[in-house]
Image 1 (cartoon, rainbow, N blue to C red):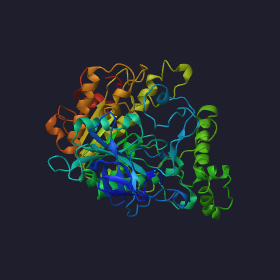
Image 2: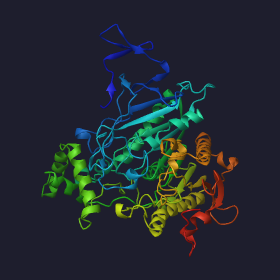
Image 3: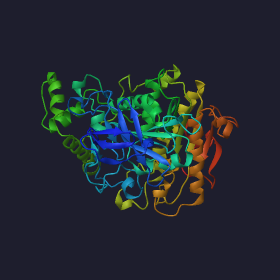
Image 4: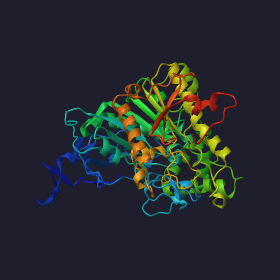
Length: 541
């Protein structure tokens, strides 16, 4: 298991002392030692915000290696191990694309930390591994299992990072919540790793339909938090699930997979919906078999699907990751005629469904309040722009087309939820700050709202205008109000979304537009292009 497992040490009072020596290993703050069923974790205080306590490495499932590669996650056994949680564990196995993209060229701190590896390396991420099923926890300093100063346990946010089911992980600078926790001192944030690409979504013949392992990992992570978060000062009865992009799709799909037992009491989806269709459709396992044959695990007889799986479990993960990633790069950039291969989630009618619209009509979704958010120019950073045309950027038609792929499912989800009587709050991020988007055509791009909620705008180079700081604080406060009491927003100036036009219908909170931190706008002004003939979507409100 990754990380510094201090199995040769024993806790004596507040000191970590070697079992074979009487010398002190160092003075430890008892507030940084948290005992759970699966181990005792030793954290530290954040360097920038010393009033924030952090535990960067907490395994939540058994390592998915060897025979557990391409298997459902296994819950951890009881353990008395003492684990150093002051450094991050690796992200799950993933590839660093060689294709120059805006994420590496102009957007700061949005990729997993790979410690000096080129952002366009064309190889497996050196800070990724298979033994990756861990999470991280940030709390206020003066919170222990007894809760805050008044004795109450704090509300908890469980966050799923994005990355298109291909990349992502805990250690992404723009998505570290230390500034937000420092500022609020009234909530706890948990971020999780989960398996991606071929390791999360293999769809191999030998698995007999078992798959979507990233989705399964997420559920086990939520279960671990529900069981153990009280030891960190968190309230398991007040947990909110939040995801962005692919993480938002996962969070939304989670509500359909567990309509009766979600374990969370509220949800936030930022730029992603179960009604979006980005998953692969590889029901015969052809993509996995193609990779297997290319790596020397080819078997002609269909009865040999078990041999294929056993053989592939012996291939080092770096070889698999590099082959898949380099093949995908080549299909995209060098030879578009080369048949692409994709490993993403696909319907299995257990973790991922093929009929979300119908399931809405039947009410087969968790009955909890939800915030649904999108950005004004989702499509700008997601479009491929060749370096020869980089200054000009993608065409406005391309940006609009890429943006409404997010905005319209957000609208449809909001309408469907309103018909079920479920409390829904809709936001639209429209801030355009130069330090967050150094090239003019980016605007309020996909992902840029995260700088506001996490309070990580300070890592972006350039001047930070007062409006940016103020907008971040407003968004943080609204999110905090929601996770503290999900039904409180209507009383604080953010009304519930109700289907229909007019002064009381489809109101959205729009952040960062027209020189204002927040303004209520009608749904038609943002989403009219989704349902009103002839209305054009405006990417720069």
